[in-house]
Image 1 (cartoon, one colour):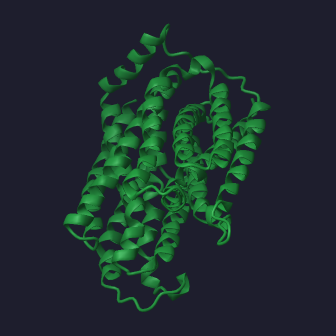
Image 2 (cartoon, one colour):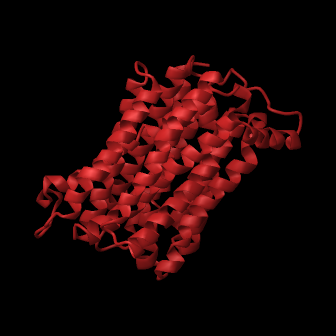
Image 3 (tube, rainbow, N blue to C red):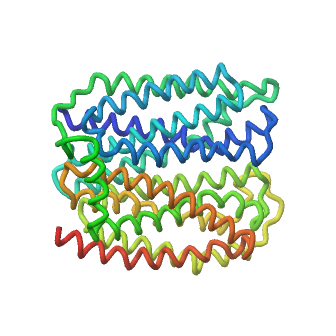
Length: 404
């Protein structure tokens, strides 16, 4: 297989799903306005998205090599294209539920396949680190694009005009499907076990490794930080900086952009600098931003704000934390996958996705609890605790992977 072609296919797949996954907040808002559901009912869309990702990743990761990663990704893209068209014609809250359940199931197939394939198109750990960071960077670009793509289809005169975005998303999915369909995959990944029960046994055996335990904790802590900040930054902008709602949402896109830039830069830097020093520098810089920049943001006196240009420069400073936390997740994943045999990559990726989903859900809940009980101006200071634990875990992982 041509490695460059396979890489392009992986980038395309991730980009499509980044837009769809990040649109859940927008569809929650539209569901309240267009379909007459309340906030509590609309919030169920998050569960329809996240639970299938965790469940399907756990169930299928160990035996995806049996059906083939290419087929798995084609199935995922085909399902999503169908769901996008169904959302347009369905135009209901039930259709939105079906859409995100399908996106969750499909993303599980895509992510496990992409993560497992990275090892087949890279020659060493530095190449693995670089490609993983670049793919996750493209994912963050897709997330940032969603903040601008969906509003572009809004109309003041036609409340259903926004649904036209799903024709575009279905078309992008089909383009990615076509590109992948004609991409040749010659290398076959070794099948983990002799039967389905043996496949699951391989996954559970990974928990016997200290490397796996430390990594799972590290991934859990990171996603807790990232999702906690991403989910609650619009609220922070609104309640602490007193920005209008639309400006608060646009400001949140800055975090997504900095995350994308950070991951793309890490893909270049890790070709020359060992991952442990990149991650150590990044987490220390993130902690310094929380310690020294956040207080100035909290104490900012904001006058009338009508556009992003009216916000003082210091107001843009805290979202820059994304630039430094960005490389952590892809590099951690790359480090642990590089330390394991290729035949275990699919099973390990299943665990990555499951604990990432759990970390994201718990992180958002914890920050939400802190916003309510400690105040929105104090909640983000508590991210220093998991950041400190992460710094320690980096050096433990370095020692364990060196042995591997």
